[in-house]
Image (cartoon, rainbow over all chains, first blue to last red; front, side, top):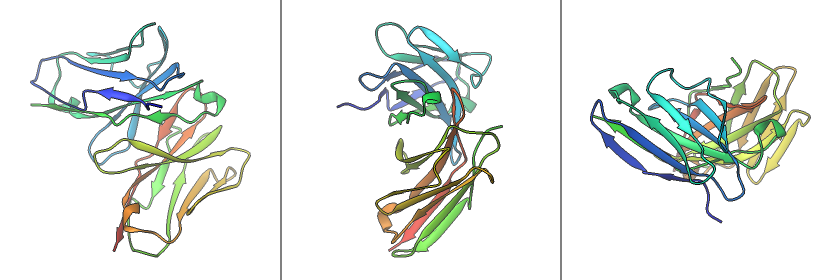
Length: 116
Length: 109
């Protein structure tokens, strides 16, 4: 039973390039969450998606960041024109139903983005 | 903000001792969870306690929840060097699960 799969695990981008991070939720999970973790800090909520819908994007920066969870395929977190401050670990999590139902969310191993 | 806040920020103990970490939060919640993160890795779910529960056990872990004080504690008994990690509490009060900054636990062999 595969867990939450994220790729790439490590990504290096030059300033101004685009970064695409992918997340495949656990089998049977239709709810996906993205979090960002800066070094030595906790996880900051970015966005919550269900299939084809963004439910809550209150943690997403207003510019350059976008997320999608299409009907088919993985969820994508896209960062355009990356800057050094975007360097962080980006974690994806999934759950079978929304967390308001009291479900645990399960995390992937993260994607470490380094902007040089 | 609903965010949990852990204390202490860092904790160093000897193997065999107990480790206690605390978490406080600000708004009403459905449940509270504790996660563990080894350096450079993802988060591993440890235990979930619902808002109507007061205490929960899992192996060497004991979690308490006091909703009147909006606080929780995680106790790790008989600690091992392999318990060295960061521990986060996470509160859920709706769509989002919000994490605190974590407690960094170092267990010396």
